Image (cartoon, rainbow, N blue to C red):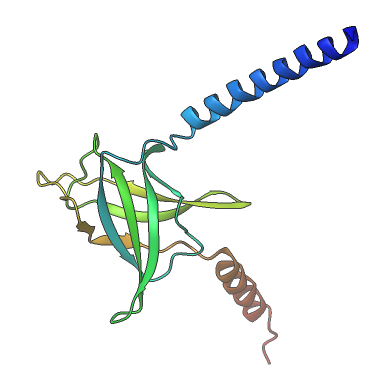
Length: 154
């Protein structure tokens, strides 16, 4: 009888600690912070694996989230839909670049605000975009250029 009471108290303690960790992770991940933002789109020639849920950052600070990615049938460009926090206004001459978090992967959308006085409205579009650099393609070009330099001349 005494052993089951101790096990019950210990189990309740474990559940309490798990609940605290869950609340902390929910608060830290900003899962509930979906409202209050505005939608912006940007068209890219390639997105390199960027997907819904990835971060949108300005100077390394998260200001939004990628909500959807689809293909524009007329131009065959990838259209990225993002939700920007309402506390941040983005100038119309902002540039959007897809960057990697590390060598192991993980992408985010980096915004580089311009100096324009006019701001992008809800439902607006970022005009200036840059697709991510393809590491495999760059490495292949480097190896190919090294091989062509070493070819013997006759």
